[in-house]
Length: 357
Image (tube, rainbow, N blue to C red; front, side, top):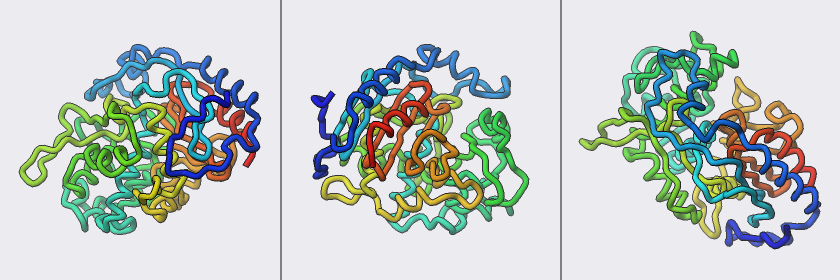
């Protein structure tokens, strides 16, 4: 167990990452997680068919990647303490993509292009922000999923998204900021707005300013749909999706996802470089006025309403009900990245119990 010891971030002076760690309990926790794969993901087309509530809009319009089983890593103080499966293998991230989208928004924020509480229509021109409701939508509303925008984007209407319908969170009809719903179509609108704002494809920006500097593998990718393209300055620029209900989204390994978690844990700093401002990390993890356990596309466990058995100090990106998880716990200097594993709350509870703050 103690022989793993791989540095994820060589810019860290970590002290002893094994201090106050019950390594036998940690080993048991990750072994059990490796034995709890999410079933059915080896055929992603069939698996996705159950994710959309209305059969008339079930058509997959983005690329798919078949799943290959549970994998993950546990990182403390920048050093990998445990791994299972093949954590270097790319997998679809589903809604964990939303949290990475928030990092790209942070780059625009740091550049002075994005003001969180300013209406989106003041910085870009898109028809979705041209009517009375649209003109009231701010960047914060887009990122904390309280825009309540209604419409259709890339052939998918907001009302067809399975998750917000299934969970009963759809609250459309009120003004922006008055309600919350976890909706892939609205997140796709966020990705479109950021593409127009930055005037470049979002994967290009992410690779240049985050993924290459943190030493990510070259295999990660970020996809949109067949028709999700917009013209910017006379060029056709692809627009990525913020989830994978209809395919696409971020494809990334557990190791690279853990690198992103380590960047957030260190308040946007990697080695000697400040890649994202500490202020943006604070904003990402500030509770939404209408959803106390949600920030800017990150889940917050402050009141243990996301994962009741896990510590209240944790923040996470999660997708597909937790089948894809990036857990960041500043109190323990801990990052957990888990892919296609079931019962992730049990994993978090056991790993956290094995590592004292």
